[in-house]
Image (tube, rainbow, N blue to C red; front, side, top):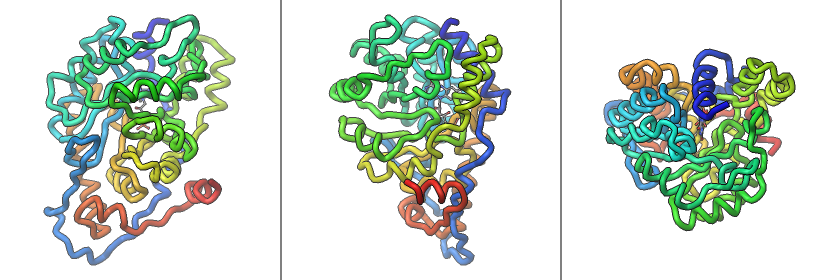
Length: 350
Ligand SMILES: Cc1cc2nc3c(=O)[nH]c(=O)nc-3n(C[C@H](O)[C@H](O)[C@H](O)COP(=O)(O)O)c2cc1C
């Protein structure tokens, strides 16, 4: 299985199949309605600063793709839309791009004035793996340069790797490797659907990194994605692993509450679908929200479709801010909320 086939599989499976757990944890966060807000919706300020860059609203379109022919259009549509809407963008894992597979699918983002560009490499690639040597600093510099990244995201995806037939499952040495990279590059750490606990946040926040994207459970499940791939390959063992680990992980809002006091900017992602979820992220202590699957089909279609989707989210966020009486994100972070159901149980148990 080549990297580009795997990347195309991920896009097609995420766009066509049901790859999210049934429960939407973000819907457990209920902002308290303010019937008499006494603010003008047209004066609401949704802007924020993330990693020194100003965003028009607190949103990141997180890593999706790169490294196969169809990825160029997807990344161009996302980049153009993010530039127009003033939000941040991450590219998918750059391993393919820096080893010569369709680099144009990554560097296409340089054609657009995206306010904050986040590069992407995998933590598994920072340590020896199945006879493959780890990335060098030169490789990481190439990944930064490929997209003119403002910051490099190191993704943690051992949930995916352990279910993936060809997975890289050596996790030993990753913490030290991240610390080593953070001495030379602006690094953030992101999960990919499993969430980050308070303990992991404590361990990584002291390594010199600049931020954490919790990417928790409740949205895209890479166990589910790899289950579909294993089924097609008639690999019953990995298909079974994917089914069993389908909803493994820390629900995204729980992960945000776990990580919020780590002293670094926190991106709340994993199952974020609308502007109320973005508002809830800020209320739980995140600096910004992130989403991937919610814009995937639009990104496969056109820039206009992505812009429309982001515009809906922006209008929903503004509506949520009016209806909680908040004229800026600082006020929103202090607005009252109720936490229900499974999310409440998780928070009470940790
Ligand atoms: C098709 C697809 C490909 C992805 N590829 C990457 C990747 O290469 N690197 C990465 O860090 N995250 C990757 N992600 C994970 C997302 O950035 C995000 O953390 C995760 O999907 C949770 O967000 P969501 O529920 O909004 O999709 C990918 C997500 C999707 C849907």
